[in-house]
Image (cartoon, rainbow, N blue to C red; front, side, top):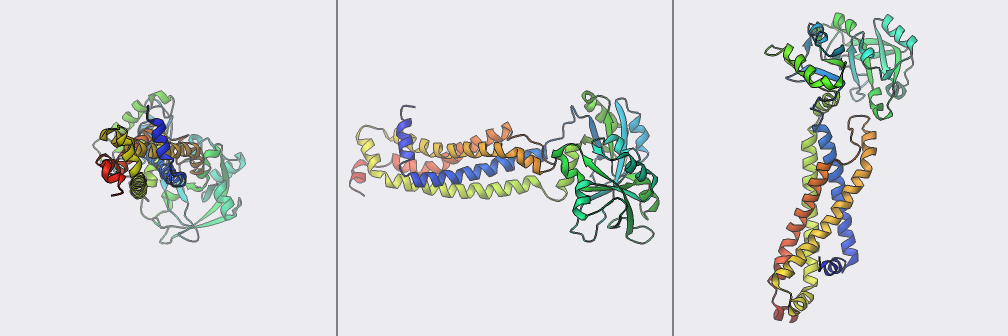
Length: 385
C-alpha cells in the first residue's frame, strides 16, 4: 500500500487516455453485469421450494402433451388445493408476425390464476359462450378489440373440420394486478372443451397442468409425489415453478446462455486488445522514468509489481463502476421484461465473477508491459535506446 500514490499518479499520467479506457471498461462490465444477470435468471427457477403454484409438464419436452386422466390423480395428492390445465393452440391473427400466446383452458383456470382480474359479467358471458375467448388488456388495446368482436384465428397446428379457420367471439378482457407482470396480458384463452371436441387430430390431451398448493412449504414433497404418479410410463412428468416453465418456453426460441456467452466473449476480447494497447503505450512513454526508479534503488521485481498493479487497478475500477451501473439498471430491465426476468439487482455470483474477470484481464494485459519494465536496463533506457 505504500506505493499506492505512485501507482495512482502513473495511472492518471495521461488523463484523457485513462478516462477513455475507463469508459470502455465500464461499458464492457455494464454489459456483463446485465447479460450475466439475465443468464442467471433464465437458468434459475428449477428449485420448487417455497413455490405456492407448480406447473406440471412432460419430462421429455414442453411440446409433448399429457393425458387428461392425470387430473384426478394429481388432485388426489395430499397438499394439492386445486389443479387446472391448458393446451397450447398456436393460432395466428392476420399475419404470422402478429404472434401472441393463445391456448385453450379448463373451466376452473381463472380460479387458479386469481391475479387475472375479469369483470364478473364478462366471466359469466365467457362461460356461457362455447366459442368465446378471453384476452389480456394489452393485447386488446394493441389490436383495438372490444367485447363482442369476432377474432378470426387461423390454426397452424390443429385444423377444425378440415379448415384452419377458428373464429372466436371476444367475451372478456382481463387485467393483471401486478404492474411488473403486464406482459402476461398479451395472451388469448379459449375453452378447452371446445378445442378438444372440434380439432381434427388430438383428443383428451393437455400441454400442462397448473397445481395450486395448500402450503408452499410442501412444494418439494408435492412435486415429487406428482412426478411419481407417471414414473416409468410413456408420459412421465416434470413439476417445476412457473418461472422455470416460462424460461423453458422462451428457450425454445433461443439459447439465452449461448447468446450471452458469445456476446461477452466478443466484448472482452475487444477489451483485452484495447487495454493491452493502452498499457503497452503507457509503459513505452515512461521508459526514462522507470529507469530513474531503478536508479533510485527500486528492484526489478518492484517495478514489475508496480506496472501490474497499475493495469489491474485500471480494469478493476472500471469493472466495479460498470457492475454498479448494471445493479442500478436491473430493476428497470426486470420491469421491462414483464415478468420474464425477476431480479431486483445484480446477483452476488455475478459480482464475484465480474471482480475475478476484472483482476484476470488486468493481469493479462499488464503482464507483457510489466515484464518489459522489469528487464529494462538503466543505461539503455537513459540513453534512449
